[in-house]
Image (cartoon, rainbow, N blue to C red; front, side, top):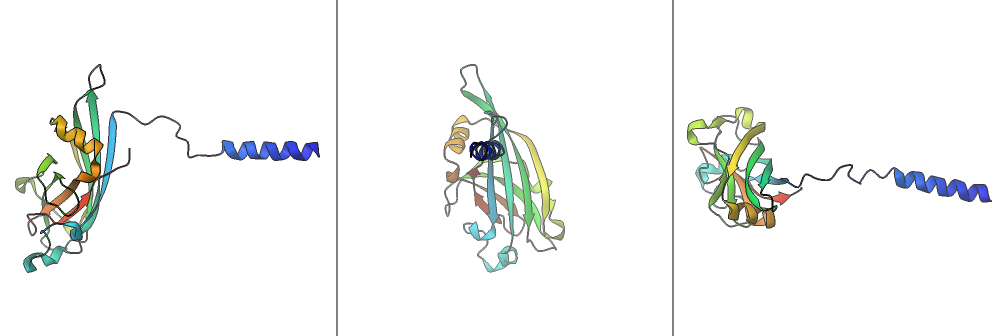
Length: 180
């Protein structure tokens, strides 16, 4: 009986030790990561006029990584941001991605651009075969500390969207969700 109890105890201890949900290292306190699921249906006024209905099935996602800088007192002094964007569902002919950025605004409300990717009409990217995978915008400076703090503290009050030649007001949009 004692052997059986010892065996049960050892088995339970072994199973508990196999729990892989515990991180092996702490998260980097100077990295803040967000995602957004992008959809044409989330746009406010972007995909409703008849001339723009060719992009209503457009969708995608973005991963946004803020590399935070702090002073010796641990106060934020700035950041750089990287965007990794995937877009799909655009018409295979003539879809051109011309801008993308973070706006201030809750779901259903159009807001001002606050953090830009650097993509412009002059550097527009054709969406060959109706999409693009893993496009990166790196090391974009974030100098407005109010904006940075508000994104960190209330991500759902901010959204990312991508603009095209057909939908200059915005083709796809998604609210930010913090994952790290």
